[in-house]
Image (cartoon, rainbow, N blue to C red; front, side, top):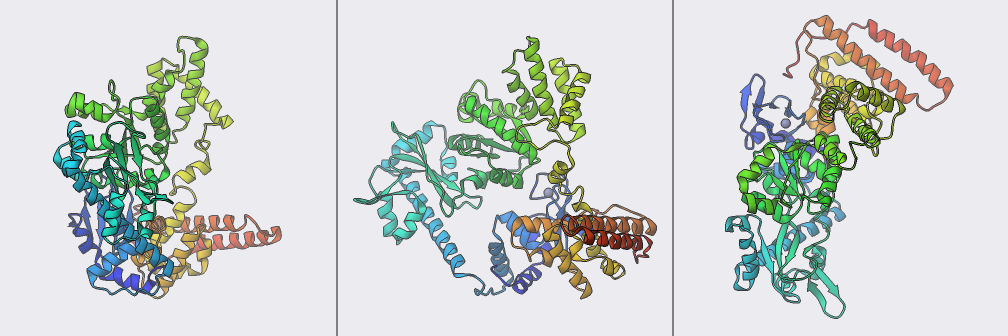
Length: 597
Ligand SMILES: [Zn+2]
């Protein structure tokens, strides 16, 4: 923990959320909310709402919500302490240094020094590219069709041939060996000391979303192996959490992101106006990448190389993205090998058409699958149909699955009834779909959608109590934090109930008691779950009781998973009594609807 809760709360309270967000998003007042275009997903109509009274934001489109601190974290890609420092400075709050442990401070200092040294190295390479000695690399970029503007935008550079030119340069700038070692762009040699990793290579600085240089890639000039050389992971570079070009693509106003393979692909795409492009730099798509992508888009167009390795990468990426709720399409580069080659041969207009005509990822999967079966042979056809059925079963949404089933059956002339029967049989057998949970089972869908099943009533109850704390006294004796099934909900319920008792309900303040981004998102959702629009007092009272009863039931189930059977029986009887009492309860509920809309 970096800062005491009281200081964090002071910083939060002194930064009015409407003022802060207004400097990033154009907001318009409508009723008790301010609305604007959501900065976290692409949209044309404003569904991002900011509420001054609650000091919280909520997007009705992508469900992102939180307080002023989480907004800054999300928007600027800051860590919690970074966001607190940023807002403290904005509001003129002096932060204490006390709760900052020695190790944390040292690590932060080291990171900052390594980033500085990287920046200095980037500058050095940048200057070399523009010096006479860098002509070969400069010509290389020019021959690849890059403008000076693009070369500058990506900070491209050149590493001269020499044993330790960069090393000596950085030493002269005052960096000592401890810092230089952490950059991981020098080789250690007993006899010669530290030598440069990049010789005679065009240099691609790798930047994080805040344009800070975190690593380098180098392409050899002339002959030499390997063609591309990348610096390894460091204290500031986590491969699975960075996408090349995202620092520029994040501000693109397109409704999708193009994911391709290499540096030159990304750069060529940007040069041709496709500033929504990022590169995975040869690393397989990880959950880290997917989370990163999901922050900026809900639609990804895959543009891997047009070769067997690229096809494999597509087939790997599609289910991962789809499972994460990202819509996926595949760009066809044929007859060219990669986007760079495509653009230099066919140009931007032709590429724009390929984007327009990008293939639905499911059709792509089936089309690739088709190639490994002999469809004219009855046996091949049966095996193909089986595989298609398996793939269709992956869709959890029945309507989506039906639509695909219909389309695929029509395309491959498969009898729809037979397909349905086959899928029914497979589903009943729980037929193994490699790497996937059994579709449509309760646990799988509860996991996929955290709002279904057990969690939903708990969220609704907390949202409701937060909005109408005056209900609490009439149910206080029936509900306790222990009734909640998730650790984090129990913590939040504990804080919220205390606040209600003290008449100081402050959901925005509860969010920043948590420093981890995932937890903050979860907590924010506890105060932003949509309540049903109910008109009469009686309807509202019934709905509230139903929610309370569900929470009690689930809490009881959870507690009786393990324990002494006799005790469980006793508490079951007790629980039944409580549920009956709740059913007969008179709850002081207001007639007002909620102002969530
Ligand atoms: Zn949104």
